Image (cartoon, rainbow, N blue to C red; front, side, top):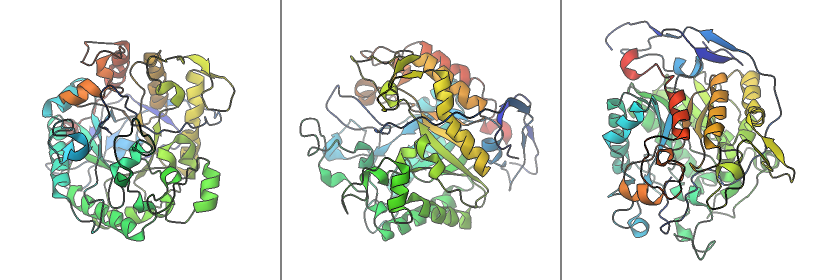
Length: 465
């Protein structure tokens, strides 16, 4: 059952019907980390919001030993958790230990996941390299596959659900997320050569065909894994900025109307690729939910330009870091506060940035849901840990997500791997608000807010099958 346009609060016992047994960069020390989208987006218009209702959640069995995972996405906020981030290790850039021994890093341990579950989370969004190589002939990379299998085993042991998100794959390297950090664009701070860029997936039909086959293979492999509750087809599609570089020049188009007028229907257009991926998945796996985010790093502003497929088990997603000029301030310049008055959307005028501002921003989700009759999730959101008023910002935002009945995963549950702990921790809320502290703290206002919402989780793999 999907309740269109309603915010749903689950306050009843889950009923289970049994049928049978059941993005880290290696920069110079001390330099900041910016894993989330680099462009600011504008807030949406205001929409009157539907009052909260309470429902009983039935979980209907589907196939031997499994629940209908779709219900976890369509019956109010059921999944509350965090992203983990891994990328391919490049020894020439990363050295011998910064990202771990590879082929994927930084390493996560069972204790990392146990600690996440102990804090209350029941859901991990695995932001991970795709299973196929990034360069021709686009074949299975068994090292990447083994790493993902190991992560899923640890997450299952910690009694949490997982969504598999592919950051990379045929024709797409991890360096899309480090756009502009090469040593030509930034001769002083750049940490890699431009040759590491690979965005060919947006200009090469063969690469797009291989991306389709990668997901067909992945779905066949993971369709019977009981903790895998979703396939997120691509992390932050972004041809609007990077184009298909180095096949051509970057596009750098940030207005969705302009982008789709010029490039709609071309290989740059994500809307023509994800239906093909969806169809391939459904040939081998008719049941596992599919997650699709929009162009421009899945910004809320671009959500209305996603074209829903005819697949009845797809969730559409956004990544929410607005207002960027607040969530990504770096010390010592922390001038914007929450709540506060500042130019949040780059239009030259000050905005009153508060809960009402956030509600207006999120109203784009309400309109999309009501118009299309489809669910939406927020599988990335957050802010740097030292922002003034971070706890109030997170409290207001998480409350608004819960009112809408949206599942959510914050950025980031960082690994305990020591080099990362010491050097890259801007989004590691466990380190508290002091920029000079690089170890876990016992508590903080931000930690307490996150734990308050995660404490609402009631459903876990162990109690639904």
